[in-house]
Image (cartoon, rainbow, N blue to C red; front, top):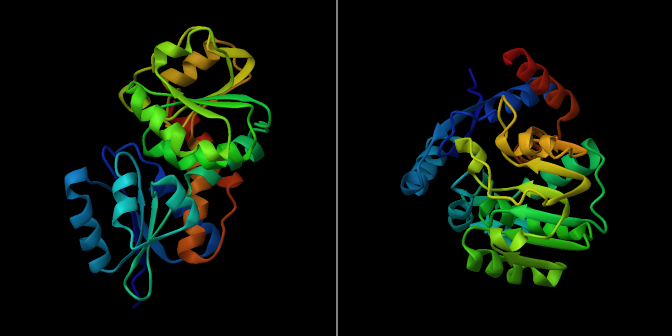
Length: 279
């Protein structure tokens, strides 16, 4: 009897992950024979655990916080978008035994913002909170939408400025500290920090959101995150978490691994219904 192909997501922490549920729904929808698990892997164990996973028959991995830049370094070859991002969230074992790295975060975010939520970034003033691996994966796709301005705010200002300089050839992007946001308003604020994972809110000025603006947390939870609640308190036109992005980027990884693209909308609707039941 043939065993199902094995996939997993590695992260630290990982217990909140909805990725196993999403890929189980994708597999059922497309008739693919696979299993998908979540495993807590700290950075110091990442490389050895990846080698063990692929060495024991694993076919593909997703990598989340704080492992995306480590995954980029581990990959033997990378997609153009992963190369540009300097971060990898999807690893695939090739037939020759090499490991291929991709970054599906950016396209996943754009599909959720544009196709699912109906947001137009052209000419918008966009603020991205955080300058880690999650931000690296979304900058190029965001700038391709031609915003009027894109600001990266980070606790360590030099990190934000360095990242902005790296992507400056793609559009109007600048880096700064949180204190430098005072007096500036944005049409879209994206939280790419890990603050929501610990129930915290990034240090945003109270008036950072422009009237009618939108808030989007790349993290997700069964309850609204502190950032999502902040956006709703500021009467954002849209204030939501990243469950849609998670499903959309997972669909891109599934396509890479299995050669078939699942339908995302019914999966998003299923997860939303399950979240309402938990509440």
